[in-house]
Amino acid sequence: MTNVHDGGLGVQKLEVLNAANQVQGGVHNNSCPAVGVKVCEYRASISRTIANIPEGLNQYKIRATDPGGKVSEQARPIRIDTSEPDLTLQGTMFDLRETELGPTETRTLTVLSADGVPGGTPAQQRSGVEKIEIYVDGVLEHTENQAVPGDSRGLNLNWTPPRSLFTDTEGGSQYVVEVVVTDKVGHEKGRS
Ligand SMILES: [Ca+2]
Image (cartoon, rainbow, N blue to C red):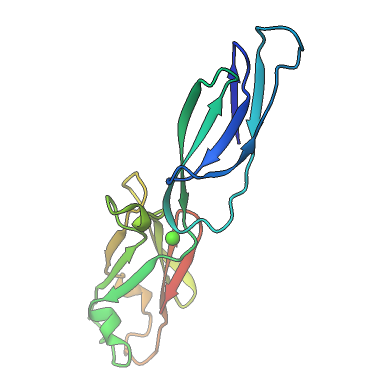
C-alpha cells in the first residue's frame, strides 16, 4: 500500500513498475475532484497484489504522475522467501548415530545453517536464519538465536551437551537428538 499526494494539480496517475519498467498495475486518470479549480490537492493510494514474484529481492517501484507530466518515483523493493533454510549436521555426535556413547564421553554437534547469501545477487536474498533449536528426546535443551542484524544471514553452532542429559551411565540407551532451524519468516527445517 502506498499513499501519495500532489499539492498542485493532483496525482493523475499512480503505477507499480517492475525492474524492467513494465507497468504491473495502477490507478490512472484521476482528476482534481473540484472541477474548474486549478490548484487543489488530490491524494491517491494503491494496494496491489502481484502474483508469481520469484524468490529473492525484486526491485519494484511506485511512479506518480501529475496532469502536467511531472513524475516522482520511489523504490519499493520486495523480498520473497518461500523456502526452508538449509541445514547440515557435522561432528562426532552426528557421526555417532548407531554406535555407543560411553559413560564419560562428550561429543560435539556442529550445526551449519543458511538462508540466502549475504551480499549475494538479488535472486539469492532470503530472510535469513532466526534460530537453531536442539531437542533431546523431544525436550528443548538449547536455543541459539541470530545475533547479527540483516537479511540472508546464516547461523552456525557447536553444541556440546552436558553429560547429565544422558542419564543411562552404561551407555546402552538410545537418545534422539533433533535439530530445528527456523528462518525469519517462520519456515522450519528439522533433522535428527
Ligand atoms: Ca527461507
